[in-house]
Length: 207
Image (cartoon, rainbow, N blue to C red):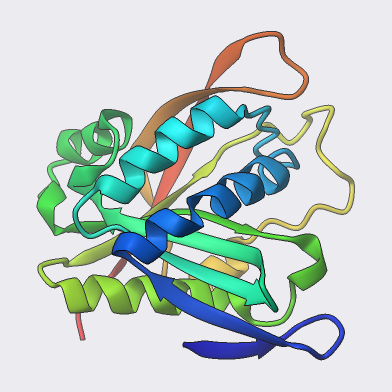
């Protein structure tokens, strides 16, 4: 367990959850996903039924982990990860098409953090935790995640939005040309699900 500081100087604990502790945290993780992903750039109009099914599948996967941040008893942020081969086909196929051995790729899934707790180093804690889990689990050459690609002129893009590209590059990640997934969800300004391009970024896990 690691600690950081909350917005009021309170201690924020960061824990690596697997197995039963991960399953117990799923309701709070679902709440966070539905709250944070509703904002730009995901604009996700989620439902509890979808979250329950999605997260149950994630938690049952071999090697799944959630790095969770708690301010007191409340989960304020979380990031997930696990072997790429345990994820959806939409994420696996682009790597196969590009010639990667998908069994060697660790997939860093969503990171969700309440706005009130940003800027205190938790983003680094999330990546540190997932990369440490991948190394401890063993067998991975690469760590990867994907980001949604939105047009710059999207009407719901906030004027003050700052992308996280510089942060990701400082962590050693870079976009992988041609490795793009397509994933569908319902946006808050749409009547039905639409497909979204998801650009993958990667870094080597070599010592």
